[in-house]
Length: 369
Image 1 (spheres, one colour):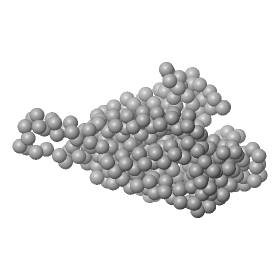
Image 2 (tube, rainbow, N blue to C red):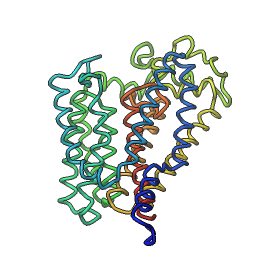
Image 3 (spheres, helix red, strand yellow):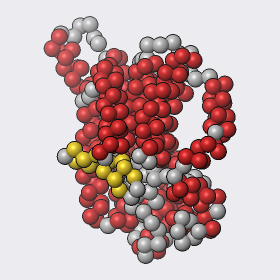
Image 4 (cartoon, rainbow, N blue to C red):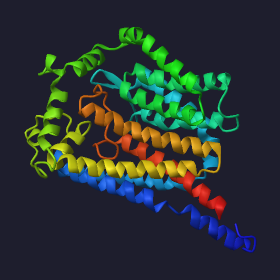
């Protein structure tokens, strides 16, 4: 801050920077949202577009609000938010609303998924725990961080919600990865997971086992478990290079493609706009990722750097799992295409994550000024 500024000028400078948003990240996010609404119109019609636009607007308000909160204040509230998340996840298992064989929702005036909150509070908590400790973390700090990660992830698995549990675990793992966790530990963890695969298989639900078996051979049950993947592949392949045209996708318009407004909306895009349309969307996603990593790399403290980097990598995992899911490379685990799939809580969670990333950017600008 300029030493020649009067106190009034200094306060005015601080307030102006708190209102500042990174224009590039904001531009890329708005472009993806607009593209998503365009595709959603074909997948679900004008009613869903209107509802989605309202949710995106609420998400933008959440993002801008969080962007004004300094990272030190976010760190102060992190343990309380983490504790609240654990309480809500336990409440879901005790008194939550059940739907389609899963108990994932709470009704407190509004119906929401507490597991979505864990996608934010878990990486925040790990970054908070490691912020004043030597990095890379030693075995003791790593063990404590893993406990903080696995406790909420396990509660989400019990609901059951494997897709969200993977995202929660990935968000926390990325904090440890960015903190400099040794490759020896990472390799040991990978080998442990592979070795415990038979035990993990024993605890999977029947529908989860069917999803994995269907991934290997979807034609073994083409009218039931394999239907989603088969129809998705047909939609993707029939799109070709340039697609069939907007509102002209037969798999979507004739309702062959299931969940075409949510989990499989990328298949709709591939059928109607072809490889070129998918490449354009992936290009926008790439720009968001690059900008997120740039903000993380320029952060002024370990908490900001860890949380911005982890949230950016988690955004990539959303994209990677959804793309692998609709193309038959990964099991169907119910992970939406970020900012494009029709949804409620997941959109607010994503926008809150970008609000925290923008807070890191604003905090850096404020210190610089």
